[in-house]
Image 1 (tube, rainbow, N blue to C red):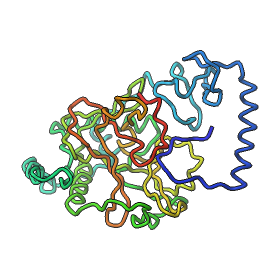
Image 2 (image 1 turned 90 degrees about the horizontal axis):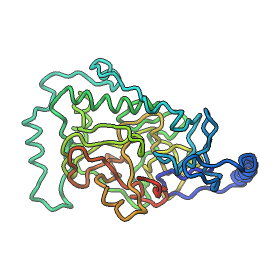
Image 3 (image 1 turned 45 degrees about the vertical axis):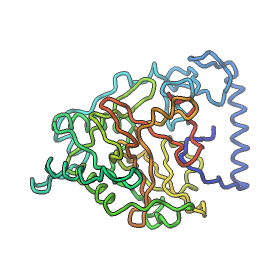
Image 4 (image 1 turned 90 degrees about the vertical axis):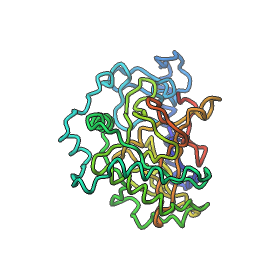
Amino acid sequence: MESRRKRTQALKPISSKLESRKTLKSKRKEEEEEDYSDLCCEKCGSGQHAADLLLCDECDRGFHLFCLRPVLVAVPKGRWFCPSCSNHKNLPKFPLVQTKIVDFFRIQRCSQSESLSPDSRKKRKRSGGLVMSKKSRKLLPFNPTEDPTRRLEQMASLATALTATGTEFSNELTYVAGMAPRSANCAHLERDGMQVMSKDDAETLNLCKNMMGRGEWPPLMVVFDPLEGFTVEADRHIRDLTIITEYVGDVDFLKNRENDDGDSMMTLLTAANSSKSLVICPDKRSNIARFVNGINNHIPGGKKKQNVKCVRYNVNGECRVLLIANRDIRKGERLYYDYNGYENEYPTEHFV
């Protein structure tokens, strides 16, 4: 099944080689459908939509991708186990041990003089310009939880999710040999232009990065929901225009990922020359951004759930993607943003 779960809008290149691959794929699909013609989905009981039926590697029972909770939009890589055979019910939690958490997130120890005092943080927040118009308001740094034990719990929740998905923590875009080099990340190549991040907002972004580097964590908890999978909740009140996190992962050319089944690729650069378009691939290295879920674009109340926006910026000539609160978010509220903010290719009709 050809994957559609890509947050991109570039056209797919057509070649004779690709066509022959599709033809072979179609033949294989027909043979598989004949072999499993009597297979039905364990959830809905229907044998229709055979191309969307997924077999458990343990019990051989079938499930529609869209009948599963959480929904699967693409066939997962490697082996897959149904909910009954999966160990998600007894998800091992990351140990709440400070040294292990510090090592996992590579937190740097710093002197007292380097840390940001509560007074200076409040002063910075007041300088955000509340009397200014909405369009000219500055981005705000996140406000960490004061209780160090609670911050450890927040970090442990993310470590649990990253470990369960086999993902290494990273808080920066990564450039790996064989993928796109850093020199390819040129904001001036953006087809429709890109918003330039102001000096003040760049300082706020750096402040957030520095706070995380010394263990002052965003007030967020990652929880596992049987319907939505891993998802993110606010652990304290978050103000409108607060930087939630940067969307990070391995940077690659879109052309290298056309037939990739990665489930969370994000557009980084949409160039006029599609061969220069870039995507962020968070399947091997990522942060909490990977677990912020999307809204359902096909139901009337879907848009009302959105409390985070995805914004691409030109930061010192490079493309960066930030998740930013687009309204006040109350404690306990789950975070959602529109996966189709820039394009309309991401299938969200089965989202909760």
